[in-house]
Length: 205
Image (tube, rainbow, N blue to C red; front, side, top):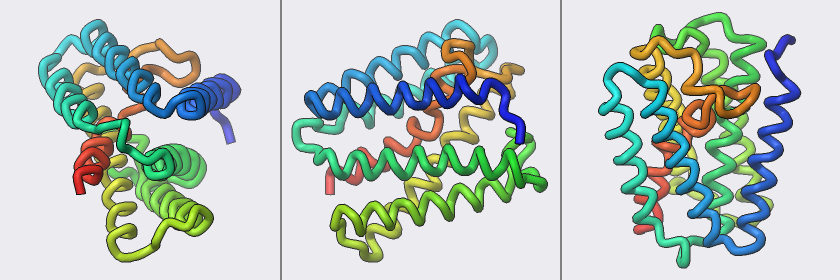
């Protein structure tokens, strides 16, 4: 299989995960500042590179940010947030890998590289890893948890499609070249932006 800039992708993915782990270990509350920085960088990308319909992605980013700032990180349990991050990241990674290697049937014209095979593979592996995580860390597995996992996966996929739509409208392959081997910050955190809305709502109940 051939990956463009695979080593750079691997390097920067490891870097992002390491930074998150360091912030969470030192003081979990610092994670919110890290995420805040991500929102700022995405806004800069949209402002600089999205020439058409610029207000629409900015409004979308704003809505996501509003839900994000409602999260009280003083009360959020680290395990629960890590569980959410695992669902999003595992779906994003494995839908890409499986789609790249086995994808043959395109899912939508909005993003021609998205395939049914990638969607199904990402869904199955993310769901399996999430259930495994729950068993390992003694999180109660019930119908509510299963529904939560499925909803986060759906939102992660939707966030990916939304970002692809904005890029297609602006004739962009990547949201920027801020991250070598990855594209832009918007490209890497598109699944997070929509799914954080559901996570925010889940912290209320």
